[in-house]
Length: 117
Image (cartoon, rainbow, N blue to C red; front, side, top):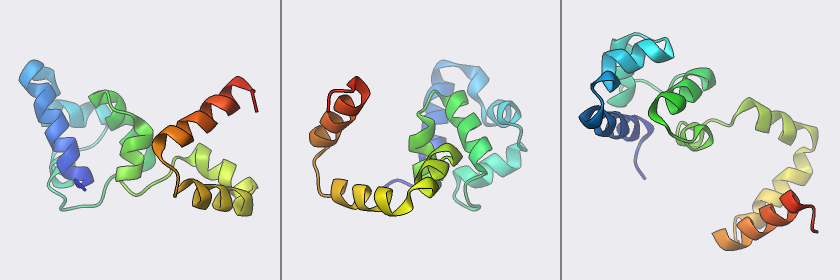
């Protein structure tokens, strides 16, 4: 699996090829970090930034925040609060879903979303 830093660098450089405002310096300014820090993150010399910075980075790069948080080894605070309210129930649910193919999980999500379950 690709590291958080290498994925960020790859996505930013791909966007830079189309839009020169996606340089390391400009993206760093957009998310409120020093360019040197973002460079170290991209080279995997330092751990991924805080949840807020990862979310800002996702927005700047047009990426899914939950995906980038997972790549960074983090869980969004809203999901953490949900899990903390019923830890045993969600732990069991996730362990059961671990064995299921994606289409089965998507089917469950649709049923819950539609209220048809």
